Length: 133
Image (cartoon, rainbow, N blue to C red; front, side, top):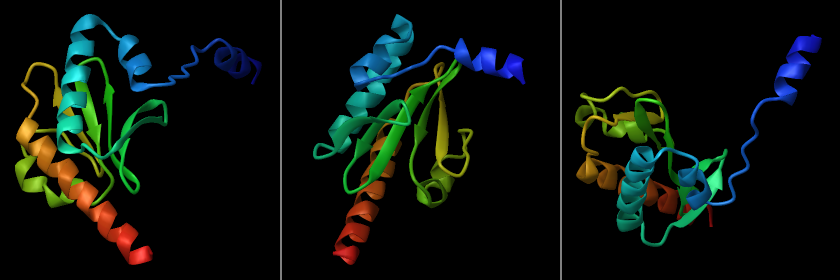
């Protein structure tokens, strides 16, 4: 048990205060891709709030619309369910899970598809917000 405590004590802790802080933590080529997906989200979601949630970038409008993050070989775009299910026919060339799409660095970002997905998610959030008011 003591080894586990020591391991966690020395793990690097992240405490990103902004999306700029998050992006700055990566290598320049990864930063470029992160800025690209951020710009796509800004374009598609001009009224959304940019924030950090779960220590990754998030765009919110009446709830979370999209998260994005960087990994060794891909970016991820995370969107609340059932967004992935709704767009499953357009996501066949990507690895997906219930709420995540992996976007490999060696392929261009699917800008039009990302825009469609997040606009759809935003509309679903707004419908839910109006229904609960």
